[in-house]
Picture 1 (spheres, rainbow, N blue to C red):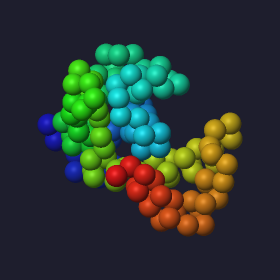
Picture 2: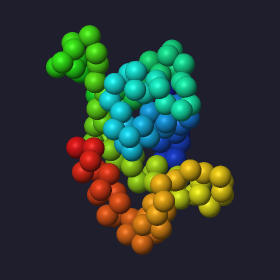
Picture 3: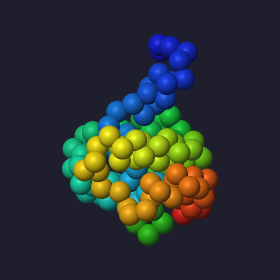
Picture 4: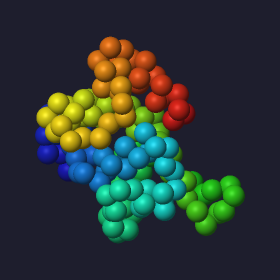
Length: 130
């Protein structure tokens, strides 16, 4: 169902909830690929929410799912190009958060590096992901 042609509304339709963004964060910045790793994030996402969000992210083409080669019972979640392209948005959220929520935990020097050479930071994380 189409609600709006607004580009911000369209992004929010895809990832406009806390949990989806945190899954993308964990995959982009921490390299998490396995369900149990995603579930063990600091925010302690309930299993039903995690399953639902993973399904939605997969349906929207932001992640893909496949069986692990080591253990076929385990599923591996990988970012697609569409998912990796969320990286600049999440980095901008980090910069905004450090400005307006001073108790935010950010790796030392990250915000300064983003302000000085944003493209190299994006490239650094993108290379690690692919």
